[in-house]
Length: 510
Image (tube, rainbow, N blue to C red; front, side, top):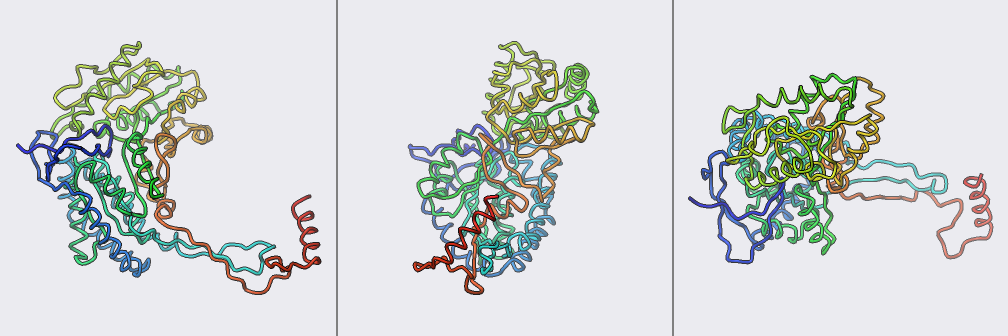
């Protein structure tokens, strides 16, 4: 049976190191549920990647010239084409990732909402607008506009192979850029399907192209002269990508995972909160960057909350089909989960659901840990599996301190009936996105930007900020009439400088 190209991936979307030995020319996409080969794909090298970027740069002239309205129509046609055959794409996502079909279909639905929003709102967000010139420069007519960057390289993940990269692709295209997309080698078929849908609409304009391969292909894309890179993966790989981008001052947006915390107050609806906790921790086999990995519960609600989470987790069973969730998409991730669970138990934590024996044959059963010390890897590092730690705190203030205690800062969630308190707590959390009363509630809100801080990355996708992320700002000042005080000259008059000094003191010195 053909073997998949060697990988050193450790988190979603991480691109493996380029190999020095003789590399194969193709790799196999495998179904993680049974190891069956789904298809073979080429490992595209530097020459092929550069050719794709060159073709994208030529197509960018046509794409940019269409303007916002012209691009909107093509993007909406692309959206319709994907939606009409959505069941086919969902089946492919399920096959390449192992996730349940329903989860795959939901992922597509969310991605389509973002594509629709980006297409319809790009003109409104990015069109040139007037800005005030101020008193001193009242003779200037000032405006700000946004232009396409050119060619955007997108390096996508395997855990959400449609929703996550489309969060960059949709907004980059709507902003007027062309895109070269390098998917994870675990999910190449999904990317090729998306690009084929575009090609069927516009066969002679390679506005969206896919290059398949391993880490060497991703490295080639970074160095191929693109105008921006959008990367999703681990913080470690993100730093290497950033270092490569620094050589050519290529701008970069990074989404690098999280260690997302849930905060539960004593007055929360505990049954509802527990349901969201299990969804955020166990859904997609826990392979969700902005899900739930740590939970801090105020002491008076702790025992009941733990009981409810345990009760809801125990009934879940992973499996190849008709199960709560599927296998670990990347089998080596099971070793990371095992290491974190072992460390939590070795340092005094307890497993109230599952344990080390839950990890076997590529599947990980639900694992709920309690009383885990804050220095454990299960608290401080991204586990990316169907596990969750629940720890007791004296107050929400203590919960905030502990939630902010890692180097990550992607997502967080709050459960309390006090809306004012919830907003105050949200303001204190070091996270790019906070949900109140839900988990992942932001994902379908296309107007909300998404991204992290610290080891969770920087920059934003989605929403107006996502459109601007893939745009160059251009400011224009047009002199409408001669300035009453002529200061932009080498022959300034003494009178003008005296008036300027008086204005400075009286306008800003009081």
